[in-house]
Length: 273
Image (cartoon, rainbow, N blue to C red; front, side):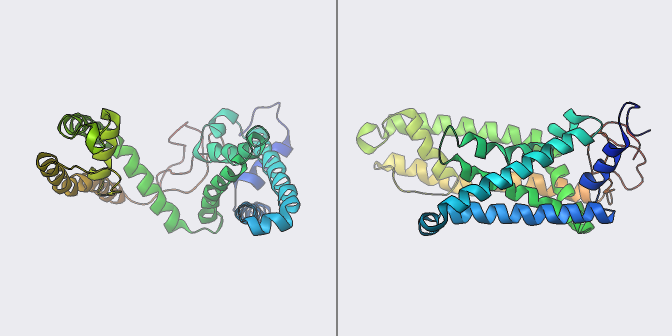
């Protein structure tokens, strides 16, 4: 049984419509949802243009709240229909769905934050599943798996970079000093980050010969540094891709999707697929 005995049949039907796209009703729901998301994003972008805002500001305001109420209702229905609501709430799509409706309500307290609703763009990722674009779903899953596996190595790498920026900032603060724009260590660390990432804003630059020499070494060093995380992720993508395709079925308990091709049970919670 997919649901506890005290749950009614309508919840099962609701789940199939909202979470599954292998039925006519489910696919229609998902397509309408995607169209609504796209329209809401378009309204938010147009609202940020002063010319259109002056002409249609009230209409945009009404539309923004209409979309938010619709998405809020959809979010509540998703929670109601799943067997384990907390699993959905804390899932990737669950967090995105929540973040897509919060800005409108928050704008009542802090005007302007409604533009953060553009996080709804991430909800369009459902398009790949809805249109059965399996190879794209698999491609995104490979990347997510690779990033997940690479996380410990990348964290160590970032900690190393942070240590380098702290040391470089302190050294440049001592060498250049406030008279050359390096007014404190945090400001000098900012310069080090801009230099290592090869952004080069130019708002702060060393003036002494020794400082320029250190900056030159850091610039050359940066080219090697930037290749490290790319190499880590690329290796893990290659390893993940060699393990084969994935199963795109959605778990009814935790809404997890990226299962192995021969999986009969959810690899995350153990529920039968």
